[in-house]
Length: 410
Image (cartoon, rainbow, N blue to C red; front, side, top):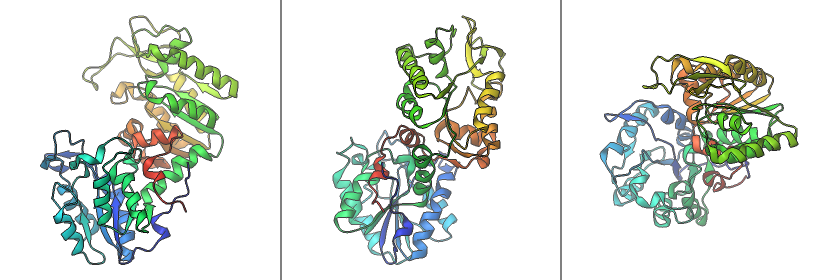
């Protein structure tokens, strides 16, 4: 996996039409944007190109678009907010075909320093087809609008979609640049280098519900890190694989042999594999999720048969925190328990606190752990919080990401 990619700093876009794939997949409520983080994250790349004197054409998906093109998933609200942030007009092309006559006319009329935002790319069914078949015609039409292409949508970089990866083929065919934006470059620098060239000791912390979601991540990280910490719901499958009673805790019985293999692999490689030594248990899952709940702490090998493990205990919090504080590089993906509940958030808070205090490069791999850091107030204490859950997991697996691989190498 090559990490040395051409960036927006490696070419001058003056007078050029530059297609920028952003991640404007923002949450909407009654047509209003409730979190503008992804819009703000795109500004440095857009402003760099505008300062160059480029004609900037933006595209993005929004939502899952399961019922066909519709106004609820239109990018119109993004255009309004983006114009406010940039302090200049953003010409929004509302056409559901995305690259039709209206888009062509809007781009033709552009002057240097103008901004056009195309409609939701997923309004074209060809955007999301299977890898290697991703809307060739749609990708070609997107490329016809531009001279150069910049991918700044890390949250979509693991998908071989028309506007993420396939479009580069047609830009390259006419001699255009295919580069990554500042946001993508930051993700590559932090996540890519953390796994491929970490400053040691390198500690990886994995949580979340299911072992199945992180099979390849566990396998890959065991070869790269010095210590692997496993908490959250996925820890109970490891505990059961050791022969422990886990009560009504979440378990993946089909992955018991895999967990044994991973524990054997850690031993053979001389790596530390840390599992919970005590557990917060309750009579059942809180309903609703933030409801008051009675929690008892027991040793992890003594979980009562009628109880469910929902968080790591105080001894485990100290064990995990000490390991994190001794590190020089920490990657964390997945909470330690049901962090949405104040009583069951203690394990996740303890890990976040340890990372905040560590003299290390601390990287949060998107998804629920990013949400936890934001929700619990630790976001500004981390070196980097990834903008892509699925993409960051695939990076941690050691997989190439189509959106990264498609960019020109330096």
